Length: 91
Image 1 (tube, rainbow, N blue to C red):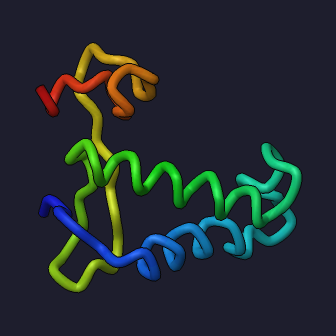
Image 2 (image 1 turned 90 degrees about the horizontal axis):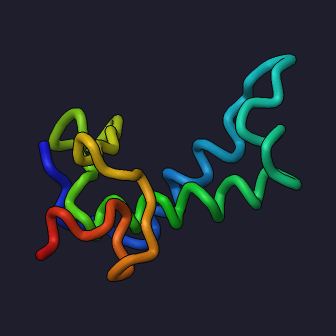
């Protein structure tokens, strides 16, 4: 189900879920960033980007899970037009 809008608090909740997830002995995404807050910042930016470009989907109306899709054959992130995939879905 395509997500057309969500609150900033919900975006922060998604970022926090990734940044502070208990990976046990593994470090998870935190191993790629300086700390957990940096993961939160990255994920929040990613969620805003895929939301803006129409690539954020949820697994149900209650929003328990999210899936980010992209356009086949396009780069995931582009600086063109402030868009995640280069604006292919936002002419």
